[in-house]
Image (cartoon, rainbow, N blue to C red; front, side, top):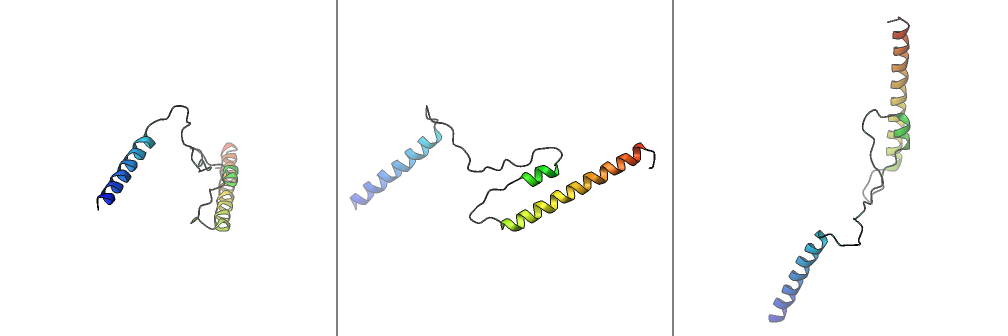
Amino acid sequence: MTILVVVLAVLAVGVVAAVVVSRLPVPGVEDAVSTQSYPGLASGTVEPAEVRAARLDVAVRGYRMDQVDAMMTRLADELEARDAEIDRLRGQEQHGHL
């Protein structure tokens, strides 16, 4: 029984030490990096090319890639159509057709 208590105490001290050390900066060691490569869309207006170029990270329990690609293509197409319509309406407005 004494051995079990000693082993548990040593394990507890080890866990506490690991937590404390993981929180402290270590000289000469770079900060941890993220494994996520997708930075997200930039703030402001979303351009169709930006949506087409976006690549999401693959996860073990992620989405089906073909579905994500289809959705992104559709979104980029909608953005292009929206931008074309806005440009067309602005052109009509400048020529006094509205």
